[in-house]
Length: 63
Image (cartoon, one colour):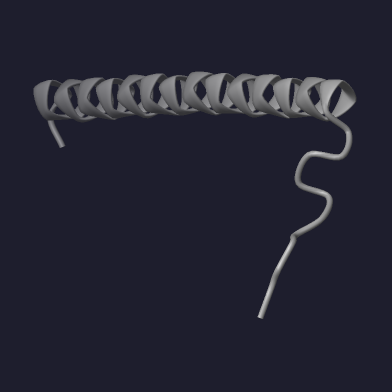
């Protein structure tokens, strides 16, 4: 194998590694945002239950 081909192979492997790292970082950021949104939604739900504790606790059905 000549030096030029070896250099190209190493360079391509380095680029692929950098792209994979960037994709994983973006995925991690997306998961963090989703988790933060879920926590915020749970906190709002807890606040709604504290203001109206009987809301949604019973279902009135007539037949």
